[in-house]
Length: 193
Ligand code: GAR
Image (cartoon, rainbow, N blue to C red; front, side, top):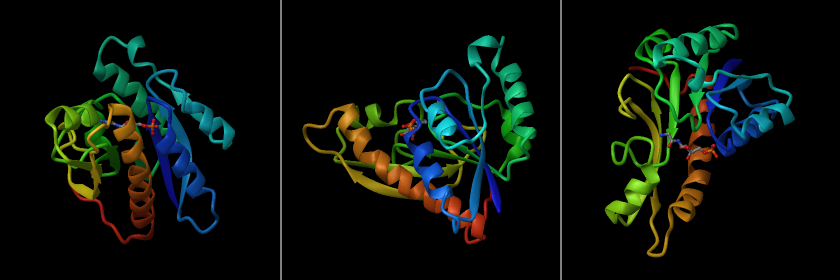
């Protein structure tokens, strides 16, 4: 059974979908812990599903390196086989990425390498494209630059706002993420970097 740690910053809708998938007895992965870099709304999903959680507040540390050291320490306690960044809005320090690579994956609301970074949905809208997408990638020490594991196109509609477009992308992200985690767990998908 693949053990998974999930890291979030926000509402945790992708986390919730993963928790729902993972509670089925035939799903080949288990979420063992959920972590956050702030007092994230999505931590409530972990509590509801009886999954332990922790918060390592980014702002409580002098720099990214010391924050990442504490985060790594908290993750190590669970020895996860896989770490899923599910809306974690912080870059991990290179030292933490190096320690777990290639076992860290990230879900992103754009068709990478298009529109990397913290505002993938906003940037796609601003560019005036007619389609964007969702991607699941292996995390490397760049910004959304690691190997692509799965991705799918999503249309941009003429009257879309950042919110309506993001809400159209999120269900696609959820489906891709659950499928990628399942395929990693069954050995159908090998992680490389
Ligand atoms: C998701 O769309 C995720 O891809 C995005 O944050 C959202 C979190 O939603 N992550 C990034 O943009 C990372 N660059 P959620 O908290 O409802 O799952």
